[in-house]
Image (cartoon, rainbow, N blue to C red):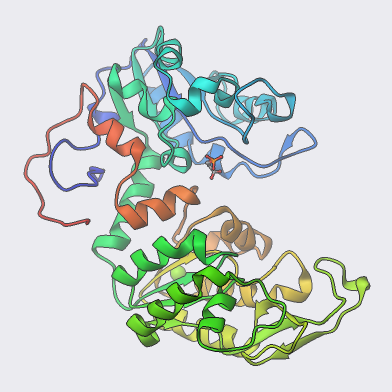
Length: 397
Ligand code: 3PG
Ligand code: MG
């Protein structure tokens, strides 16, 4: 087991082996069971299944296990729309004998890291395990609180996510190609900058490509556009030149058209990078899809976050499908982060063909960006955290 020591010096993040014996002990497991639910049923249980190795390890050693999670974004009070009941039922099938507390975010103390809420949470427990990778970028009570008093450990999922994602920062096999999509440059700017620091090339798709295209002087029609980011995009392009790769063609929706409503009218057409007035860019075009596919095929490491277009609309899925297919087919080590990209992979039936599908969206990006997370920092201060033997000298910035 790799020690998940994100700083390279000082105390390490304790793993399950660093816990005192859990036999007959009450263990609190923070998991990220924030899963999609439709009509009272869990529609994708990846995050629940991903915690099973930790759950089985603990149960196999005699622990009495109580799990806890947040679900959705209730506003600090009970709200039946965010009941964990469907999760509880699925968990009971996958891991009988594990209790699940109420949605942590039903209490305002969760998000504010209120000491009184932490005290209530840890009351009666002998140890704490964080396997909630997807929530470990949140300095919330259930993530940072318990290690202040309880012997604590990173679960198997958290440890694996950290190992894979930090590996991309510190020892990627080259060429390392990062593919980024998503709506807004604002949301991804620090990630783009961080990836430019470690990847050889960063391919830009998704709606955010239009602000970059505008920065290059292209008319972008009615496409999504962040005017206040144009200067930033221009200086990134000036600084990094052809390491930052933009689409060379776009699939666009004509005036009067509506997303997800093919009957509403509006032509769909391939255009170059100069969009006609009134046309909205909705996907990367076939030339771009082929170019991105080639670069992914030639890479030895690939990180993909964010769809290339509105793949939920069959008229605009081709770019995302091509990237998903290329990521599945390449011999490179492939890591996919973020709920949307994982959903795209699943939609195309390719989720088994990547090396690592991260269970975290925001968490995977923050870990790549900063090399650390509040949840890891908290575990390093736990009473049982082992001293790192020697500083490794790795600089994670
Ligand atoms: C997620 O789904 O990204 C995590 O569970 C974190 O949820 P949050 O963004 O509501 O904190
Ligand atoms: Mg592969």
